[in-house]
Length: 257
Image 1 (tube, rainbow, N blue to C red):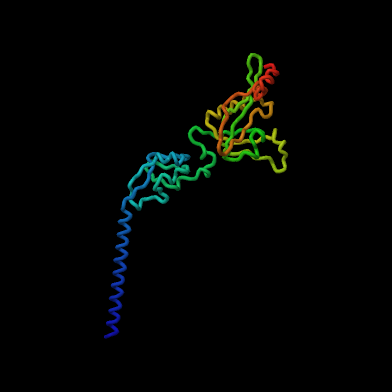
Image 2: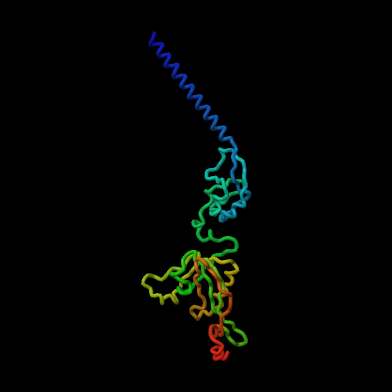
């Protein structure tokens, strides 16, 4: 009799444990389902965000929406700051949640990721001296200085000036090969990719088309400082300014000009 009572007791205890476990599971499941039905705030696109859109611009295309917690997309952002330094690598359609999976770093998008608004990528060919090959690096900034001949009334007047300032180097020209003499730079063609506005590109193209192609070095890039940059007042230089600047009055009179 004692044996049978013990077995019945064990069976009852196991049944109670099973009931408790089942109740615990059901309770947790209900809690999980209820939590999934809770509504949370997410960020969605107010209208389509095209590929290539800068994250700083995309932040103005975002609004908030309430969705069930279970509907939150993986990678969904909680603040526009999470994408402001990124660029859209995939299109996000109006009403879709904004996720980091559709944005990438600017560096990974190549040259296009560094352009926005009226900025353009302009590739220019020149010799190693003109393009500062081996000196200038990616992300440096340069000016364009050029010497241009003005033809008027049968007379040629040569002027030089800084034509464009503060152009960003997107891709620096390759430097001279190891062991190459520095003096071998002239005449050895290379190229550089510069960022400039569409208007600056038009002016640069004019310089390339109108400088004397028979004269090496009729234009050059010059490297700008990294910090504490200042610019001299814009002016034209001619044979008169080159010969007279810095001379005393008597020395200037000796020029007969």
